[in-house]
Amino acid sequence: MHLSPDEIIFWQHGFIKLNATIVYTWGVMLLLVLGSKLITRRLSTGLKRSRWQNLLEIVVTMLEKQIADVGLQQPKKYLGFLGTLFLFVATASLCTVLPGYEPPTGSLSTTVALALCVLVAVPLFGIADQGVYSYFKSYTEPTIIMLPFNIISELSRTLALAVRLFGNMMSGAMILAILLTITPFLFPIVMTALGLLTGMVQAYIVFILASVYIAAATSEQKPKSGSARTAEA
Amino acid sequence: MDSMTMIAVASIVIAGITTSFGCMGPALAEGRSVATALSALAQQPDASSTITRTLFVGLAMIESTAIYCFVVSMILIFANPFWNHAIAQVAGK
Image 1 (cartoon, chains in turn yellow, cyan):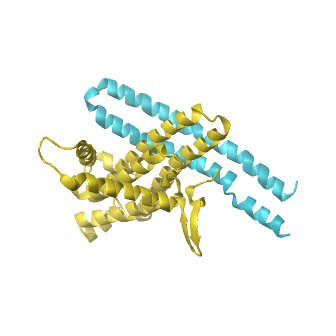
Image 2: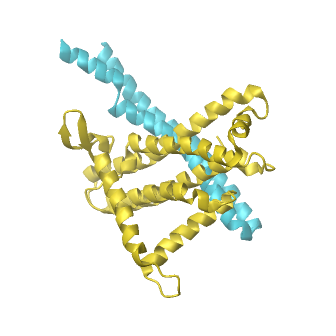
Image 3: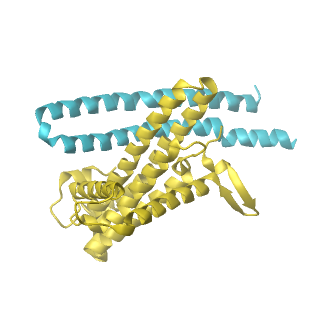
């Protein structure tokens, strides 16, 4: 029983290793890119459209509506980044129905990478929206004494994002592995279903938290709504 | 008791206590938050999507503290640096 898919190594040549995490990440990427490419080859704007296009439209409109609900003014600007976060984590978790697959988000490497992407994206969107000086000035609000605390809160919520996703995915896989050695037939199926549910909830959580952080970074000039600031931490 | 035994006993006992105590607080907190969300839903059913979304975000935040405790337990059991160091010393002798 292994702690993370990092330990399953498919191929190794000196320093370069292909472990299960990277191979399954490539698999999920291939699935998402190929699937989208195939579905969007013949887009139709009329009433008659293929059901796959309908499915993609449902997903995209739902994501856009959620981003607008959080308070971001132009959802389409952020839809690429935030939507990819959601789709990657959701697909990585849904594919657990395939036998022999381990979600790459069950490895700390993947979740830290995603959290680092959010850590870099939040200031980028903030600066793109407000300008460099105004964004950095927002770190010194309400007083200059809060500057180290604001920086620490940025780093700690990135860490929390990574560990939350890692812990949820890893615990699902581990409980499944333990139960398989105890009661092979009934409980692992129930636990897989529970793992699917928590995977989708965690994908939504990562998406919503990233959009709340971006909303907090881009809305400093407007009169603050209580939810954006108090949702941090 | 030599140091290897002490490391093993401490790791095992603390791993169990970490998960058990670490899950009590979040469970109580989540119960309270769901109860408050339900009463808010009963008072204002048309705000249900906002309430549900906020509830889920809050539950994930609370859950993450339990996950921290779980991760510490797993580290103690499976990736314990003190145990690995002790094993390496015994193997090196």
